[in-house]
Length: 220
Image 1 (tube, rainbow, N blue to C red):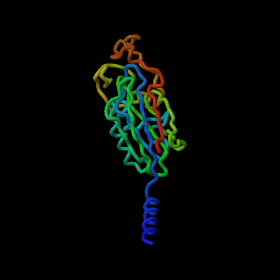
Image 2: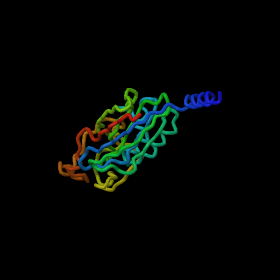
Image 3: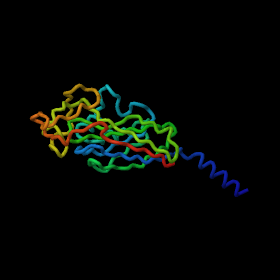
Image 4: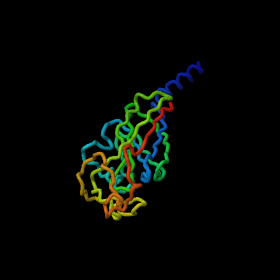
């Protein structure tokens, strides 16, 4: 009887455990000379948590897009529909990759969103919102390429004082919005080599889409 009681108690304990799924998420920088700011990852249950194409971005994403600061995006973890927020340990150099362990413990959590700034720009980000993890089975993986988006919060002047990356060392976030104020595909940088005289950038800082790659593998 005692043995059966123990088995029953164990079964009840397991029944009370949260539903857990584990994924390995690897982010790779595909650019030639654009370091990426520390990556921000969110897991959540509602769509459009990070951004919506064609709409103004949040101040949190503006800070990431203009200065590479992901702290306000990570603070989304305080929202009820966001389960977790993860940050890269450091900027991600061109050609490098970083892997994250992502665990889902809530039944309704199904989406992953990713964002990082190309730091030798005014407000370019590589990002994807609402990647659906639901259909991945243990052992399966998917690869998604991330386009380069223009946050639309800062004019693409490319001047030394406005680009925070190592190419210029200028200002990061500025609360003033002097561009179209909506998220759209980035038109690319011109650089001084292509006739933009005040640009702090050269031809190596140009980029093509996609700017990054994300590989997601379901572990269990």
